[in-house]
Image (cartoon, rainbow, N blue to C red; front, side, top):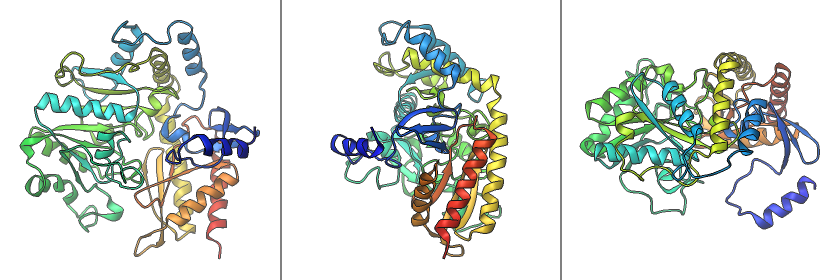
Amino acid sequence: MTNKELQQRREAAVPRGVSNAGPIFAASAKGATVTDVEGREFIDFAGGIGVNNVGHCHPKVVEAVREQAGKLLHSCYHVFQYEGYVALAEKLNALTPGDHAKKTVLVNSGAEAVENAVKVARRATGRQAIVASASGFHGRTLLASTLTAKVMPYKAGFGPYAPEVYHIPYAYCYRCPVGRSYPGCKMECAELLKKSFVDMVNPEGVAAVILEPVAGEGGFVVPPKEYFPRIKEICDEFGILLIIDEVQSGICRTGSLFAIEQWDVIPDLLTSAKSLGGGTVISACTGRAELMDAPQVGGLGGTYGGNPVSCAAALAVLDVVESENLVAKSQALGAKVRAAFEDLARQYDCIGDVRGLGSMLAMELVHDKAAKTPAPDIAKALVAKCRENGLIILSCGHSGNVIRTLMPLVISDAELEKGLSVLEAAFAEVTKG
């Protein structure tokens, strides 16, 4: 069927609340290229929203899925255990930051990993309150959407929300929450956490602070190098746990296996998902062993958590990370994309800021560089023009004015150059006149 025919069926059968980047239906994908049902190819700079770091249908992942599917599709780990779950937990315990004893619970979505991290933190500390970031995104379930600050489209009309969740501004240097400039600011944004203990929440009741090392949906915002060490100091001072949400930034996207490594901070709990499964459904919460053991038997898990096929896929992904040196590939890819973005910024006044970490890069678009007036209209037009010309890109940010890149780390030089050429042509077309 054609895209138009399938779109008509979609509109009749699927709720409008399920968003789509465009009226395109995929038929197949390989590496960094997606082919639609009409045979048209698209360079993929979206990567399934950060899921395909190892590329679409990586041969090792496909083979691992095929082999496992012929042996055991599902038993429920709570009924029949299987080695894959244990092997993946062992692997994540070894690879996540810190050389202390760790344990891992496997679940399904990023939101579910976040909710389990909060459960662990509350049970381990005996406290209830959670402090999150105003720029953070943690999912669409009740608690996850409570932790997420942005109202539209994630929260509007879905309340009431979970209690004992508080938000503080993030370290957003381009739009500093305290009106200062880095590096002379002395990290006043980090001190906002401590200030919240005066006018927002009693620190003795705070179980955890949860933050993304790079604010994903919030606009690919990267805090300065001093930010997370200071946040961890404050947490330790008040006996508060630090949860780092690596759902989008993890598995080499930022030029290290996990982004938080680049701040030399060891979190108490860390969530991972998206690219961990290489396209299959899996997520994890990894943390200090004594914390992870705090919940009672039966308090963690779920019917589908750590599905054997997804475990096999995730183990294959981590093998690809090592065998194909994806950390180095992410660093090299990031250098190329950043250079291209900075070149575009010199040409187009609508690009107010180029930022990111590794290959998790973005451009914030504005109508006026001095006033920094958000330009979501330009972002929307760019996304549409690129799609029209065979490139899939995504916008993000609280105002929808940030163009982000999440292309597979295995993208070829030819695919990358073609995609960047389409993006540059789109800028010329959208901003002319």
